[in-house]
Image 1 (cartoon, rainbow, N blue to C red):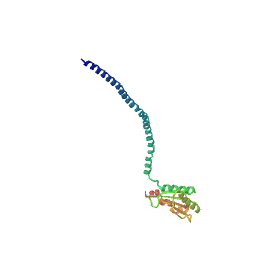
Image 2: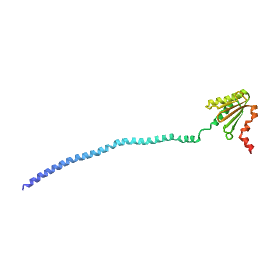
Image 3: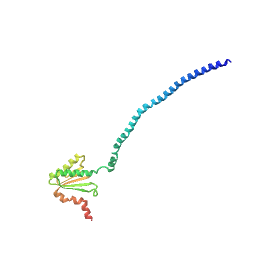
Length: 200
């Protein structure tokens, strides 16, 4: 009959143990509650980084759009290469005509002789009113060519002043007095249109 007191003591110990476990349980739950709070606190810096990354994404297309106009001139450079360098004989012919007009040469004619001879692509023929005028016209052609970066390969007849020939390397300039020009008639000799009419 002494067993009942033992059960009472055991009930007390069980009650104390359950009370201790209940006291410890809230502490554990508190630590568990803290863990989600920390996890929730971590995304805050991520949210701060979010707008920066959006700003970078917004600026990226702008930089890409700025780079596009720089690449646009490439086709123009290709087109310039495809066109090739300009014909120097055209520039020399225009230069010679300008030099002759500057000193009032008479009856300037330009003949295309590219298909007739290999010595020149064009001939410029004009008339001077006197020996001095013929000389000054030829010298003006040479001087203007030198200023533009071209060099005359040769000058003939400058001493007499009746017929001066200036060789501009592809363009021949004939400065003649009226009687000399009428006698030699270089236009009839080198004019392609007159040759075509005779052959027809």
